[in-house]
Image 1 (cartoon, rainbow, N blue to C red):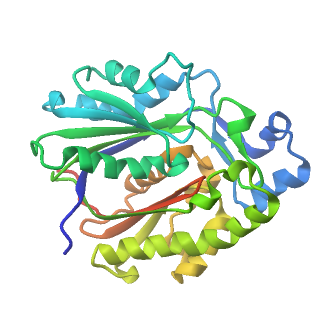
Image 2 (image 1 turned 90 degrees about the vertical axis):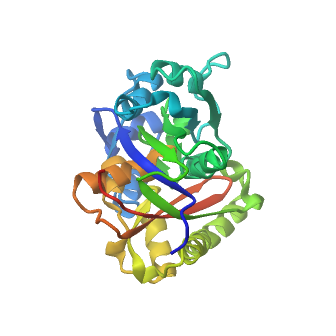
Length: 317
């Protein structure tokens, strides 16, 4: 078996209590009845979590606080990484990563943010964490946190694609711990679509044609680099962009649709960089992760970056 790139020691998530139905988003986002029908019937979005009164810092800290509280040696957390999709989530003088670090009582750690891969940054941050830990003390850890607010219609709506919900997650990473071994991580960026939100119609159409084949290729490469084949994968744990994009990708992969976890698209919609971790915690809570079996986490960020990582599930130790 391929030696692990890193291990995921613990993953947790959090989201606002307030649930909003997709129809309630029509007026604030200027959506016609036909657009609302597109999101519900074609893209599979029914509800999302949204709370304009919940501060960003509270949301992110709530996902990580139990992980930190359970650490026997919190001083071994050397880095805190805030991985996010939105480049500007607070006033310019506010360092969100440092504030989260300090509220978690990890003031000794170095804190910084990553944004370059947009909604794929949460998964992409794992490779950064692995690089930071490489060659260091095996007891050292990196805490990756995600979470952002859909504070404006400009970031709440991806036209014809997604309505963004709110969630946060935290992932404790080790170089070689007792958690879930990550056997591979593959990333591919199609730089010609870097200005995805304002591409001409013909370029958007071209991106739509290459999206599913590229994501399927990245998933296959990650599985191959892990020394496995697709039948060895129990489930693909995806980002929640929409059902249509994943149906096209499932067809490219030629795998049964039940082997891609899509239940949370209807429940939570697309939650920026947090999706794969939220979906993992949902599967764990539902008892759908099996000791020793293999899973693929996959996400795509505008711009356009495609990420996939293969992990082997290990139960609590």
